[in-house]
Image 1: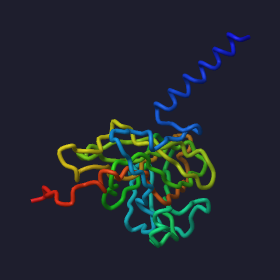
Image 2: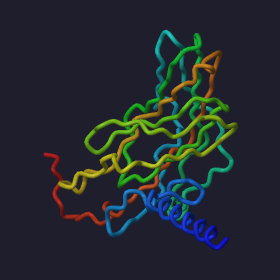
Image 3: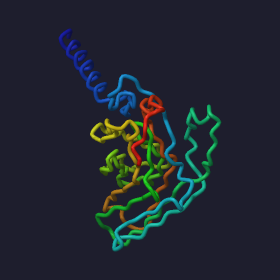
Image 4: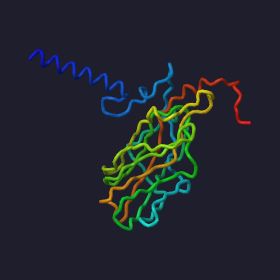
Length: 238
């Protein structure tokens, strides 16, 4: 019995170490403070990337022979969404009355996808640790991905999760360390850009009309390098 208890204890300790090394919290969510730590100090802040207030800023696309997609501004939002502490402390008030609605009309069952793009990429200051967005997925097996580009413009797709839930849900994805977010030759060139969202559709559910809604895209980012930048440094923009 003692040997069995010792084995269980060693197993739990090993699992805890591996969990910490992977930067994961006890509830299975990424811990921003443990992702890609490459500096002695960090200044982690949650920032708003977009609140999806202007539908004219967004476009959507789908293969023409498989469906038709439209975007629209819809009044509403998730009741569980909490304000950003720093914005409240600074008295920043930004309109937050609408969400972005996307409607897809499928022509037939097929292996397909559709994408939602901003009119220009959304740059995020600092070194981004996680991205989160509120989504209504209508309990489907479709998969949500976020499209990003790194410091050098190299594009990547990050899987956020399956849309198999009802109502609003805050979906979060960690930015892997393989995404280059810093040019060490230039202290003013860092961070990623959000290029849009990609929804990979489950063929069994590509029938009729499908609706998906987005609200409040946020990032948890390390701003230490931003605030510690030399004010007398010369910008290489000439």
